[in-house]
Length: 410
Image 1: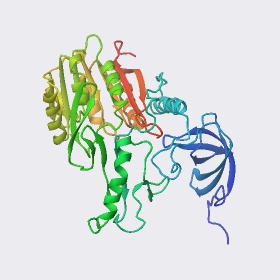
Image 2 (image 1 turned 30 degrees about the horizontal axis):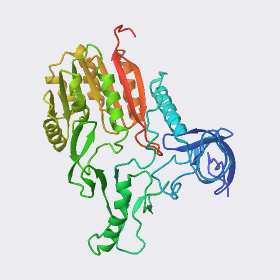
Image 3 (image 1 turned 120 degrees about the vertical axis):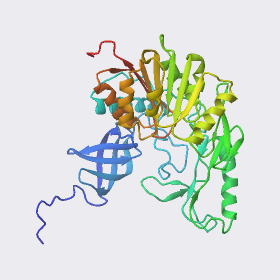
């Protein structure tokens, strides 16, 4: 039978084994190799390794594969701690030395900013905690897709490259308290015949009150000497060992000579504003979530902080009534993973604060937003600091600092 017009044959047969050199790793933790210019993605490999991979899918511009064996290993390759590594999708880098992880995350930030902004800027060494590369995570949410009392129902996390659930009885990156509580909660779920008619999610939040399972419970955590109350099932950073250092660094970038005021946009329960209250004459925080704002106000009272005010509303709404002198103001941003709305960025640029400190859990969307600031020709990037809140995983937090150019031709 004659092939259709413009037919392009697959570059590889299904399950064909190929040998290739890994020259890069994507921000999803996938190794990148090339054969005659054709890209092949391979999981659980490291830059510089020569491997054999088995093709399982051909796309229009690349192929996906499974790792078969390592021919030449990287000197940064180590033995994973978890027996489920490579099956469970929670971790991507347990086979990577921690020093290698930190350096690779720094390089990824550098590459993202260059790619998105066409601007090559120095990136500081990634800030991490070598004493807590495992056992650090203070919240996990195991899932189950059918009633847990049924035989062989897995309770755990999504498999690598699959939507299926892998059964997880212990998690090495979770805190010791969580790993102590997890078997008890798994047993409880499996004993509750008829309570769950379908799948669901289990919460284990390790906090000052112990390991909490109620999604709606109000719990607390300390950052240095300050106490913060938040809803157990809602967002609050999950690495209590590195979080204080990240907050401190961002506030150091925000508080420079001549800066009297701080705007804490996307403020959540008020962590940055309250932690930085002694560094500024006045702090204004804004958040779209009413429960979060209520807790932020309670946290200010709880910690005896009087110069921080929190407002309910969209981040861009603050500029219409803000009484701060822009030349004496830093705006600190900590938006969700999707980044900032372009309209907010336009209003922020129009306000022209002296400094902008952008904290992000999504370095790709952050780099996209940084381009808008640079394209205004009003701001330049002065500092980039990656932070490793999630060792053994592909996730990177990043703090980018911009300052208003004194020479507006820059």
